[in-house]
Image (tube, rainbow, N blue to C red; front, side):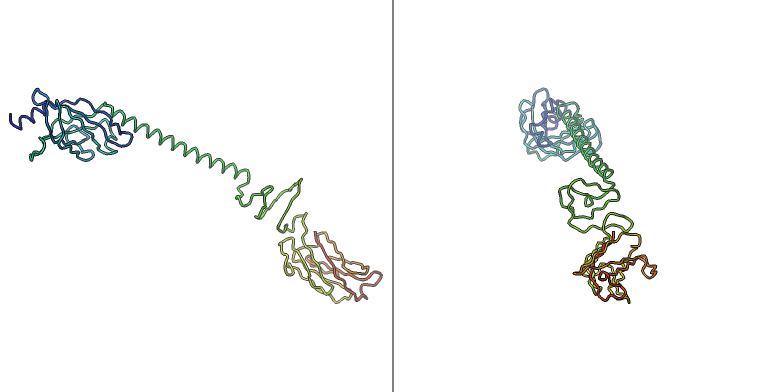
Length: 319
């Protein structure tokens, strides 16, 4: 029998026995492929060079993956068993996979002879496992994706709830209990505190609101400002935005300009002197119409302030 007729008989007698999953499937994309070749009516024995290709159609079509060569394959009683790996994407469409086999005697210089027609890889363990694996991967991805969405929604919900509860105030603007608050703490409504309240910074308040001190000055007898606090701007250095001027009247008459309206506020003045003194305070001394100014006169008791020449230092607080 010639070599050509031997291959022809092999072609006619090709029988696929099974296609099983490789034991290493979980670690890769390989699978075990088994087949049976007949030489005429008898099982083929010996060594052959085999080639395998995958296509997406029984005739023509597109090749899937690379060409896999298995030279020097031993056939015993016509049966061979080899491991094939066409890559991770070879079985993306398990309903349209066809395998083409070509062979020649081992070491032959002649071209491979294609055994046809191509055989479809259909419902076999590998294909079933591949489909299930794809579904499992998709299911896992879907669950993970949903979990990610849920997690994002949870974060968004928490953020939204916090924003609604705090009026959209950034975390740096929170007032924390039993923790040092280093930011700018503000309130527009009534603030009720039943326990101790410790403030490490200065407290300021708009001139239109009540409750906090609006101004404090310690003025020397010569009219210089020794200490001061501006409750509107929070200033504590220099003259704090205030000016003190002597007047032409002797006896310690001072005109204080606060830089903001004070003729509708409450005022307290205390002198710092070793002798009893009288205090005269006026918002409109000499019919002065400036609402930002207060006049303060300090003089010794029972002495006419217009004839007194003994000025006294004093402290003034505006509420």
